[in-house]
Image 1 (spheres, rainbow, N blue to C red):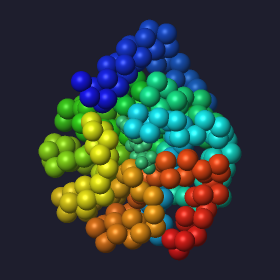
Image 2: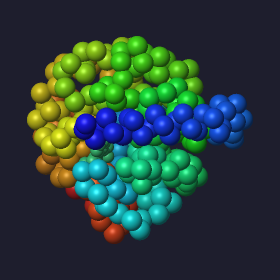
Image 3: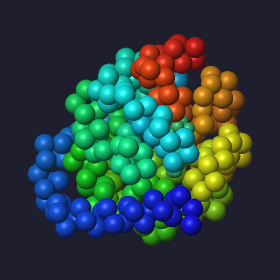
Length: 260
Ligand SMILES: O=C(O)c1ccccc1NCC(=O)[C@H](O)[C@H](O)COP(=O)(O)O
């Protein structure tokens, strides 16, 4: 069994338990549920840097990355740095994240916020809205086409942007539909952890122009971004490269300065 299979099994248990404890009516009555969302795709279309900076404490591939940075400081720092959006990992078991991280980020910055989660149930999409997200991630490797359609249409009805993540041609072909806003190519194979920017390059030509193209994972240099831009990428999701430093916000500032 690979890591993605394990994550999905644990996620199913987690969501089933939460559904018994917190009915969706609770989400619909939270202060953030009706918040006016900020579109990540629009922000990326009008940006010349395209950085989506992630808050990531640990990961299955790298274990602990940053145990001390506070979400508040990082959200403020990323916004000051001029990033286009912030990705917040909310999975606790494998990434050390929480839904409170999302709320804290919402309270301290006006960036479009992506809930980075392994979404397998509509419940998590309502939860994302209630905790202040502007966009959700759907991972093609763990969903059927019917689920992608159902989940993305629900997200759109809540005015959330949808980033659909793929890692190969089959995942891309099964997923393309009008209810998606952004198409992300993950350079990391989530089953083996192997990382290669060639994945973004080779899949780029198969992504229709209607979607904002995002290259995700393993991006650690300005050169990588310069290499990817000619392939049509307007978004670059960066986690570890910023989070491994003592001051992720300052690190994002330096990165963006060198990019301009
Ligand atoms: O990062 C992992 O090890 C990982 C393992 C299994 C599933 C997902 C995983 N990462 C999620 C991500 O997509 C990344 O956090 C994101 O793209 C940023 O990547 P990086 O810049 O390489 O930290």
